[in-house]
Image 1 (cartoon, rainbow, N blue to C red):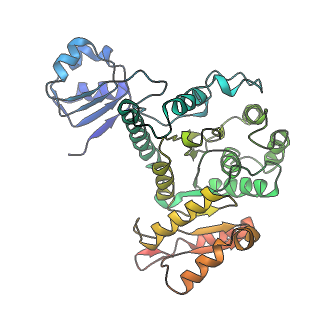
Image 2 (image 1 turned 120 degrees about the vertical axis):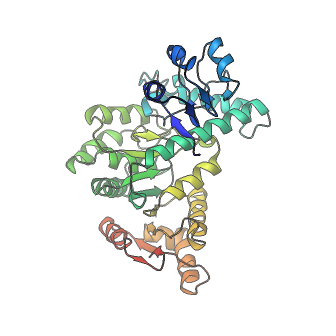
Image 3 (image 1 turned 90 degrees about the horizontal axis):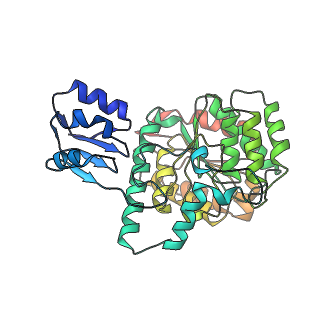
Length: 376
């Protein structure tokens, strides 16, 4: 039997009131002490209690037929039952340029990550990170179930793209348009092209003039290394409060020097970068748009090639390369892939190379023609 996940005390109470016996559920990171009467009377078996607060009497009763996983004293939650928000990761932020990031939860977790070692062999730390990342994956899967799988699209690219660069503006427009057409936009959740992705989704539903107004503020701190990078982002959020549109950022503490963008409405932040990258590309079944980047972006290109070539996810999704000069001259990845695809050494590659936002959108629309068991 599949284990049902419980993510709120209210949901669990309803279940306890309704069922005569509780079986095969997972309860994550909840304070259940107010449900002691129910949990001491209703039979419960084969359930997982992950980092829950329980009384001694509840523990004594539940541990006979269930699995109780304790929490550990660490600066991050081991069993998060939902995705992060920018408000949580940036808790305590005071928006003073020189000190704002230092006081946040995100920075505290990153400092602990560095202090204990990026690739630690300490069993307590490595176990805690694994449990955290698994819980984030569960929360991510719960979140994306609200979207048809081919409506999830990713934009990949470098963290160094300046807010004042024309490509940044184009990515904002592209993401805004796709979000308004019902797509969930996903990125690595950091600065540069990633931030532009989430800014576009954040401004979806507003006139295009909102982009000009937002960029007038953001370009005061063009790069994430500028002291006012965060404070200008929060100024835009204050000017344009969050609307009904969502986006998903998937950053990692491995690259913790890159602060997560506050414009992502939902943030799935991982310790293990390989899980994060593979998972990001796996859920982007509606297509991946590659903007200029460096080694990390090129790595993601070939990860996506592998998924498509082997039809790992049942069908191949489009691989769109934005900025033809970059992908044919600076980093000539596109001619290589096109040649290998044309010679059938690589299969199922749906490639596109564009400089124009409208052309990218037209290509993505054509993707939804189904043929021979996979999308082409």
